[in-house]
Image (cartoon, rainbow, N blue to C red; front, side, top):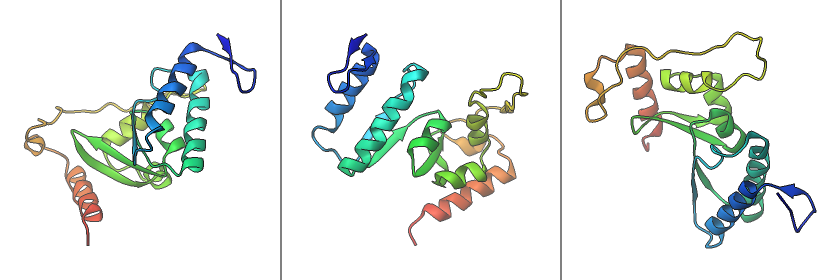
Length: 162
């Protein structure tokens, strides 16, 4: 641990390293800033400070992020819009609040169900994905459910330019 120069608080080395990595990433003012699992390996007690820093920098420097994560709770906290990818294809896309209100794709439901519940006595809402994982080379060869195919078509239409 060492003392932060700007406010005297104690920070772990991993927190300092993460902040330095963020500074290095934005010093050249890229548009957009791409992050890949930025907080996945950080202690949960430090995640909020890093995410708050990212949000503050977004406001102050007018940044746009492509924030890649498997943690939908983190995505909801930091993102205005969320795209859920499954086997390299976007299967859900929209404003953060709407994605959480109307989950369509089974993978999105499984990601949401994997978020830890802070109340250990509450029954888990774990979702088991059934069937075979589609072949990434030809994903529609495996029999997808009719609803899954319809939701893909719906999102493809919404995402295609008019």
